[in-house]
Image (cartoon, rainbow, N blue to C red):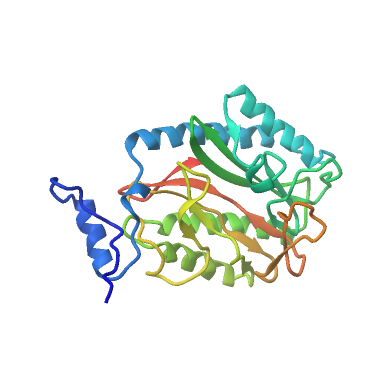
Amino acid sequence: MVAKKKRWHAISGQPLTDLDKQVMYWENKGKLVPTRELIKTPEQIEGIRKAGIINTGVLDEVAKHIREGMSTLEIDEICMNYCQEHNATPACLNYEGFPKSVCTSINEVVCHGIPKAEDVLEEGDIINVDFTTIVDGYYADASRMFIIGKTTPEKEQLVRVARECLEIGMEVAKPYSFVGDIGHAIEKHCKKYHYGVVRDLCGHGVGLKFHEEPEVCHYGHRGTGMLLVPGMVLTIEPMINMGTWRVFIDADDPYGWEVISEDEQPSAQWEHTLLMTEHGVEILSY
């Protein structure tokens, strides 16, 4: 029998820390635990925190200007200009062929909407603006929902519940809990409203790369997925559909990026970059 490869190793010649003991305990119980490389150093956390400040600033700038009659291409220009003024780089630009700096997803577009001159915001639209910033090699990632003018009560509720899902996920993300605890709590909340939690896309580790371990699913069972350990940095970003959780890629998108709800009902999403601490999560970008 081939021995199972350990993901966590104590540092040679050094005594075991409380963190080492906790992680090794759960690994010996057969749970998935992070590698030591996923635990960010204080210097790395400071770098990610600086990227998070700029990333939040980008979304604040969008919030100042977003309005009816604005094209999503104009939103992209706002994001690009802010990055240039703050010596930052938009991570999305040219990432695996994505042609713009930001994702702008309107109504039934779940995520990865591509900014276009012809996509003009109208009264009643809901739109997710999702931006990832690179500063000195460190990444921070967040998204917000915006309601254009006055919309329907149904869309207002969807946007509110999607934000509640993020907040609930953050609340249960405690040190030495599991990624599955986050998904379980979010899915339970959504079921009250008969909403669909998108399963094809998820949150993720972030900081030194755009996407790192662990995958943070927004549905699932308690006690499953990776162990959450102080020093990990990740996103929680539930995508909540008014109807089915199923999605498809827009056949008319030449880049193959735009994800749409299968029944073409509206979708909403909020996302924060979060640092796992000894007491819970600290928001690094929102």
